[in-house]
Length: 457
Image (cartoon, rainbow, N blue to C red; front, side, top):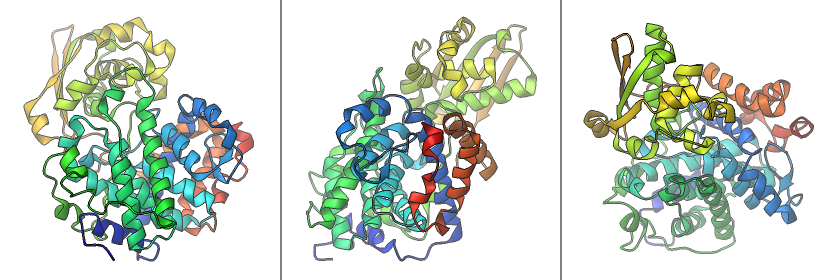
């Protein structure tokens, strides 16, 4: 590379190598899992605000280009598709997680990669390679800057910009110098404050859309010769200095291209903020074991790590957004109706007096052991006091869907079919699933959505 090596250099070189790098079958399979999960959460997310509103806002560019918007199947340019699909993929709070980085990589990475691959009519294998590039680069940066970064910043909006840029740069065939500049400009344009999801607003999914769009933009610009500050990560006024505490960039790049983080992705099992999942799992496991009804519960105490208390501790949600960020509501809904998926967040459920009354008897506090284990472990200890005098307790050391308790391919398919089938119909969902599993043999990703538009509209 022509510039002096910086913390970005190994990530840029890795990105440039992705089109021709030998990949283990397990890594390609993991990338397919990520793409399938992305479609599952994006299809319903694309049918509601903010994505549905953005479709109107960007009406002047809809129909121009060959990157698709989901679930309509309408086409636009790559940047607009990345923006709107990125927002859609982060709307229903069911998207994937890289636990060590407190980060949702699929939102920015796949939204950007698919938009570029469709716009350029690239192969399914090229798409998977772009996805892998984006996951590996951004997962490692996310782990390096957290948990300190997460005190104020929304990793999916900030670090996600690097992931989107890496994915797009790999798909565009950027060389190492071009990839460096794409990543450098991604770093200076990264944004996303946590205040955005501590209020009733549409800003949180917009973070993901902005990251995807910005990554595509910086990659396209770098391919055309636009340069960036190569030391944006490790410079004295750079990303690391400004947005976290003492990141170890050498450690972040160690094992790049050998130790694949994409194989350690959390697939969400509940349609709610991930900070609530361990408590949901523990409460529902206790109910399954001891056969009590929600109406028999006197009080629930959920001890977890600090961000769970801060972000999902509310007992009184009034909207779908607030309910997804309320551990008390999610536990109450799970015990009452047996699921914390989409059915738990209908207007009827959110106004159900029995669920809301139980939520007010669920108390969230910081458990020191859980807090020390964060972010490597997302754990919770739940104690349920029943009206008959019994007290039940369970510690969930992880969440169902985390790398140490993963969803199987069959579990993932069930989740996808449940979500996608409700939007495009069961037959179309099954066909789309088959095509995603065969991506590495697909000549053009345009074939992914062939024939589905009528079913979606």
